[in-house]
Image (cartoon, rainbow, N blue to C red; front, side):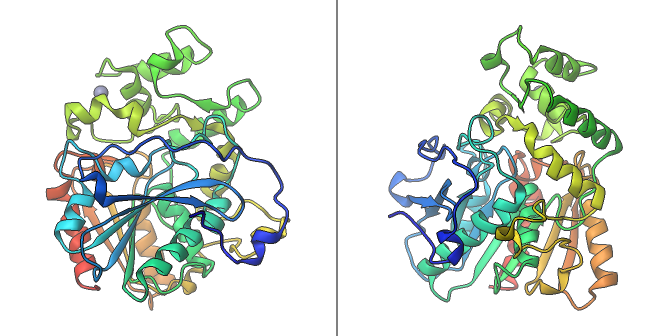
Length: 379
Ligand SMILES: [Zn+2]
């Protein structure tokens, strides 16, 4: 079944053609394949996405939609080598759903497909996935657990009023008040300059791009002062695609996960940087499109529209987050002051970085319990 909404947006002409016929890369998991339902799913602007339901065997469970970060994929919640979030949710009585939004590395768009901004994710991908899930689950509660840009774009959908009535939201890493490390900001400006060159995305798989290529200087830069010899790990752990940030606490990954980094995190498109840069400068989530009427449902400034948040929010962050720093604590403090009526809590995970809150060998022990406690109080 191809999912199309009846939203009037669907009848308006799209501005650009995008490559949307490519099949998704298969998920890697150790679930019973018969329990993994992959749903053909296309956003109303024509872009092919991925939507997966894990069948728990009974039909009365609350549903939990999981949103990955940019260049990651649903695979980040399904690691076969650790006790992962899907395992934990199934054991605790939930029905997991996974959306591969257009920034997923299981899809081609970051590398070769049509360009997009985070507006498209907030306007099309997330609300339409939520609508589809609601059609399937009826009036059962629906929660969302979102990581990094998945969470940042969710905040834009929520403050636009496009996903009303969620039972609760868990946001990891960043939500309404993005704050990047100083070195990251500076490098993003430099990376913006790269847009003018023939580099339009930053690869992570050294084996694919080869030792000598136009990317060699990026890998060389990332290898400076690196303690790990793996070039993919260097570009992510030591450099976060050339920005200078760090994506995880190295010793938290199993050897297997470390060896799969190029599969778990794909190339980063540089053409997304102007939108990210605008968001960073505003210190809140702002829409990119100012004049295109298709995007007018999105608030110009998500923080100013925070009163539209109608669900409890748990802000999670590792104390050592090397990409978004203390953005989540800042978000909690700002919302407590500006919107004291909202139900927003903040939980810090000691010793954790950014991605290891989901990919880490001990995440089930150190992180997922906080998520289950939050969901359990509201199911
Ligand atoms: Zn490493």
